[in-house]
Length: 79
Figure 1 (cartoon, helix red, strand yellow):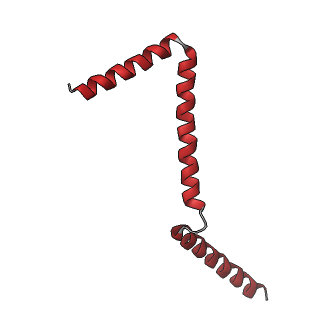
Figure 2 (tube, helix red, strand yellow; figure 1 turned 120 degrees about the horizontal axis):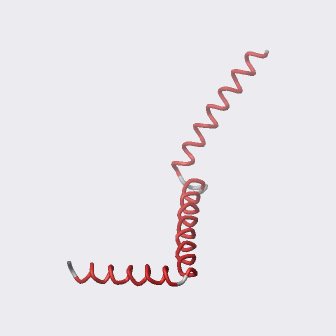
């Protein structure tokens, strides 16, 4: 094993030991992972719904075109 692997093993062992000894450390690490998940989901939402995103604009334009066609067909049917 390289020194990098020993270093990671030591760090994770210390963190695991702290989690066993003190419940607050385990809750803190759990909260950190929840914050990371929320930030990742927020980042995905920012990418999806940014007004200048060309992919999103293309998808929404196609959706609106289909909706306009449906409404136009319904209006012509009902006349």
